[in-house]
Amino acid sequence: MDLKLHDTLTRKKRVFKPLDPRNVRMYVCGPTVYDYAHIGNARPVIVFDVLFRLLRHLAKQGVWDKGKDRTKVTYVRNITDVDDKINARAAEEYPLLPLNRAIREVTKKTSRQFHEDVKLLGCLRPSKEPRATKHIAEMKKLISRLILKKRAYILDDHVLFRVKGVRSYGRLSHRSLKYMKSSARGEVAPKLNPLDFVLWKPSKRGEPAWKSPGGIKVRGRPGWHIECSAMSWKYLGREFDIHGGGIDLLFPHHENERAQSCQAFDEAEMAKVWVHNGFLQVEGKKMSKSLGNFVTIHELLQTWPGEVLRLQMLNTHYRQPLDWTNAKMNSAQSELEDWVIRIEKVLGKSIGKSRAKTEVSEGLIKALCADLNTPGALAYLRQSAKRIGDDPKRALSFLCDCEFLGLLNRRNMGLLSREFGGQGQSPDLMIKAFDIYQSFRSKLHNKLPGAKLEFENRIRRLGGEVKYLEDGGVHLIQTDDSVGKIDDLIAKRTEARARKDWIESDRIRDELAKMGVALKDTKDPETGEPKTTWEIAR
Ligand code: AMP
Ligand code: ZN
Image: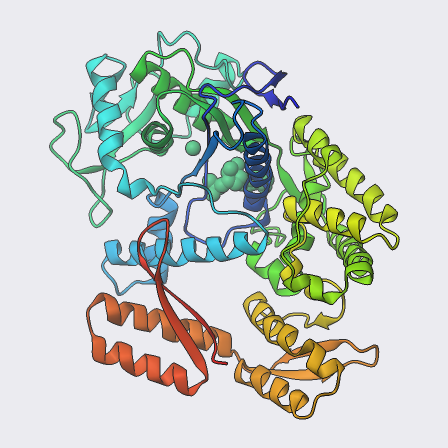
């Protein structure tokens, strides 16, 4: 089956064929980590997660390389951890720390939050998540190449890209010269021409600073656009298959990325296809802090399961503008509840523990292959849901299709049916509590002696109380923020371990053990950094 994608550069839907049939390469501009991600930021994360899943499926099917399973998909999404907004937030939040330390704290905390949020939205981790500050050497190499080719010049300790003479500048964003000139004025820097843009700039006192390229004496830091050119080059090569991001990034960010990369490497193109998601607004208005309609993913997850957010997102085609509303949230929740009831009616609640799988349905893949038509894919799912009836095969196939789209996860489906609820509780608490509930479900149902008491005790140790509803459902009430306390203690222990203070680290482990919390020390597979997870000791 051919995958067709709309390409912003040619403004056409084109059949997608990877440059290397053994390795499909996709780059998506990721978050700037200074605050909780808002629901607009969630849009590209979800959209490109669906595309990633689809590409992996097609690769596995051998669509581009005849032998099955011979193609891999490399999805790179960067983290921007050097930026004026980060510096400002660090100074505001940690006024007593040296700015560099404060910046590290802000970026560490914010990227952790981002990962927690998008995991709950059902998004897979990209193959690589490079951070800008770890790729300064690559950026400087690119800048030096551009200086050598006289595509870049030095002025007042800045390095600027010379746009004049780049014939295809403006072709990607389809902008007129007049528009580009007027919007480029916002960038404060010395320039020979208003269209030129910053590749490198001097750092102010206390700001992150690196030895500058081009023989500039003062230390400096990179401009924003060069980050993505450097990181995509490092992980995906001079030219790759898909470059994605929100439509707001088209100009100047992507136009400039393309100009830099193509000029540095004498390539006609940086990416074969440019894919952009449309903008998201809230209740009919542009989202902004001053209007008070600025919604973070984190806040929404306090009230709604992540799958509900994901369903609302996928109900609109990715290129269309999306109006985010509470009413749509309610209907997405009802729809998912209905689906879970239909599945559990046929397959029973024990399906949560089963590994049974079926192939993803052709009809679903067909819709997605038509420029990622998620409304079409959902229409297909709605039809399948209606056809489940009493047929276990159909129920399993439907569940697998939902799981493929990241809309359901059999392990915690009960959080969606009103069987296990708890409005306003932290999602982490809900998932951990639901895990416990699942291991007690049948014991509770069968009224095994002592089960109820033990279940309640376990939940209490998490900082919750159980309320039994008349319809048989179980409701969780948070009585204290134990999850928050546990996370804080773990963060303190991680710090103690980093400074090799083993006495303090063991003390915290014991304190947590007394709270009934068992720790597991592992390594983050992406960054190699130590990572600690926890569970209630059984
Ligand atoms: P930022 O952290 O602002 O650089 O944005 C990270 C990603 O979120 C980029 O791909 C943006 O295009 C995207 N984005 C930001 N705001 C919105 C919005 N309101 N609607 C859709 N995408 C957005
Ligand atoms: Zn970018």
